[in-house]
Image 1 (cartoon, rainbow, N blue to C red):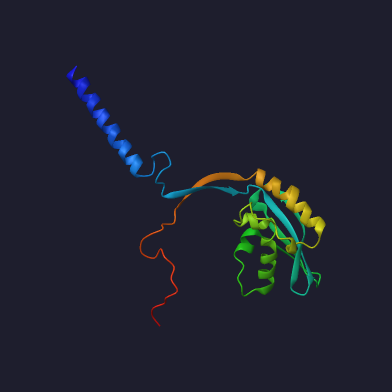
Image 2: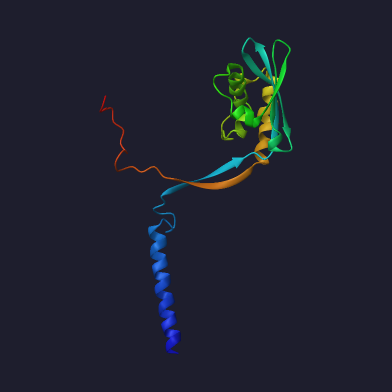
Length: 178
């Protein structure tokens, strides 16, 4: 009987300590959270984007199709001189700025659905100026985007809250140094 009472006191003390730790770490009913939770949507389907050079060094998206697998994503670029080049999503992500044609293709592609593959939030709209015409823009911005979003994997992430006080928390116009 004495052992049971001692165990009960031990468990009560342990639960009290645990509740203090939870409250001090932000587990106290939403008060004092040091983080912000957000849902990240990551496309699981791929995209085949067709891009055409419409004027010298000016490219536009002419068509976008959804593919079953993300890793099959690619861009098919048609140039004014009649050549065609194909880029994987990884090649576009790694494009260097010293290759102006690829850099321009990448910039236009990021305004389309490929931008969601590179981390742009689904809440941001597609860029109308990236598309060759209204038909291709409407197709991507209505059925394409919604299908891509509906099949995306979702996860909740926590990011630290910005602190309002302490060293470096206030903006100033003063500058020190040379």
